[in-house]
Image 1 (cartoon, helix red, strand yellow):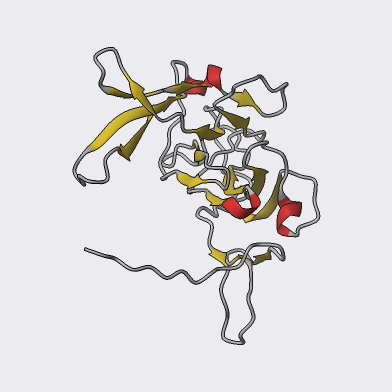
Image 2 (cartoon, one colour):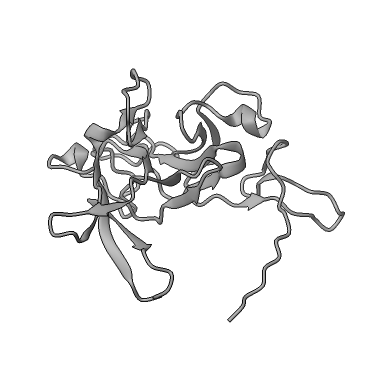
Length: 231
């Protein structure tokens, strides 16, 4: 699978948009045929780095255990002149990425995490919290199923909170005391993350996940932004 990316390169002309291949992270062989069914998350961080993040998981076959799924964070390399002076997007491959849990190489263009549980897959869009440099995403691990028998249980969903640059556990950045990269959040499939950062009817400012209910005491609150459009 290839991840396509678009970027407007001239704000004066709204229809001038180039398309390129940001990353190629799938290859031949059953366990490497990773697929992406949900939109990525993207953000410009406080230090000006453009980040794109997403996880792999074959949505039509949630109980499959054939593919070794991964979660990826790409550092957008931007556009550069090609052989004929056309704008070309630098394509990232796994050889350019740092695998979490191994020694980090210099000049990596992002990182990836091998999802550790058999059959574990990402079946929702991640959320980036730029102020905390944290990325949140959920995964689903199917139950064990013996041939000719019904599966035992509904499987498990997990929530990951990782450092945007490091891939280390980042729950403490949000006020949750754990060193683990992930925590179980329920039986069955819980996909997209819903965050609460505003005021409730009592005037309090709940911060954290809505479904399931997981408070993040140190989650940055929402700020009101004003803007004026001038023709």
